[in-house]
Image 1 (cartoon, rainbow, N blue to C red):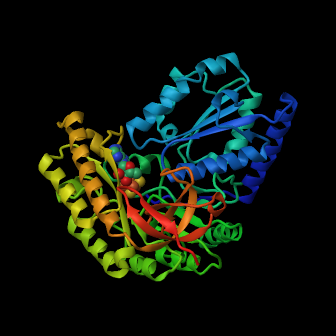
Image 2: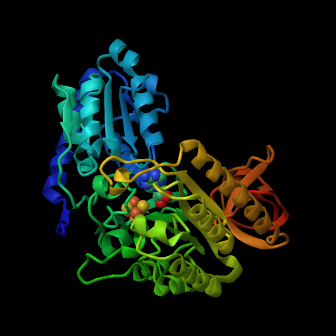
Length: 474
Ligand code: 5AD
Ligand code: SF4
């Protein structure tokens, strides 16, 4: 059943603004100095973007911010459910706060994000972590002022985990972590139901923000001097399918590319099933769109791809990559996510993943050992291969990728790249780090005032994962 997108109304947002004022008044009475909040974010960029909205609302309510949990009056964990490892870290870190909460009963401990949207986990938090005050799901982030107000003024714990879906809230204040690099969500949710993945269950159905809302936020970011703007969605290639009139992701990219300013547009994640030739052509044609394609293939074996419900074959994936290489040549950088040890995968099938890695020549890979997620179809499959064996396969894959990365890096010797200087480097004290269009990292010697600017840098020495270069004098 398609879920209708519900855009949160002005009136509802106004109501939240009134709660912001009420919280602000309570904090003013309770504390002499500005109370601090600590927001801890796990997982993907979407979570980072949500946390930036959470911080925007907290700032409007009068909170300052700290990285130190033991000086905060409010600690919020924005959780991730994609793999078991991320979940375990949350349990460990929340547990570690028990003493602090008992010694400081006025402190509020809150949990939100994808983990909380699963009933069995919220239940476990309720039973086993009685010192957690506030838990809220992924569809009610915009209601934080109201929930926090309840939490501050009542003795009862607040658990707000409605099973609603399809919500989009515009106009929430944002407090960004970086003043040159921004995340801009263009859509929410996922409809793909890859058999191993929990995301569609915890983030709901795909829904797109309106083009005008995206353009408005984008223009503002460009005007404020943001240089790298990353468009976010679980599957950006299906952007706009739910809009009337329909807009494709490629059309959106062209419109953003036309906005005035010196910036670079990035996007993730693309799904091979919905990645069109039109998108690849758009990337090649639009000068402000980075020639970096993060196109996860997950596995190189057709039987496994089918079992994963990915909706494409190895051959179809390769034909997309080849088309992109044809149009963008050397400038194209490909990255991918890969899952090793899907239930029932054999070593021979895993070798197909290795050979695909070799064939495409990715710049870098995000590799994961399969993690069983309760409630997904893959969780019911037999999984006879041991974790140790899977870890060995992963090791082989990483070794291969290291070899490929080093070879690819060599090809860049002597080239000059326009790159965005994002921070301090690691090669030495006076090194800066910059990112090329294709997402390669170049380090070079330079003064800190260059951070946040675009520079032309010539590669002097290719190392395994980074390039060493020198700034080109103009
Ligand atoms: N186990 C391991 N990796 C997973 N991913 C998603 N679900 C799982 C899982 N159950 C990986 C996929 C996806 C990335 C964000 O996380 O590779 O692309
Ligand atoms: Fe998960 Fe697949 Fe959706 Fe990505 S496309 S979020 S892997 S279900």
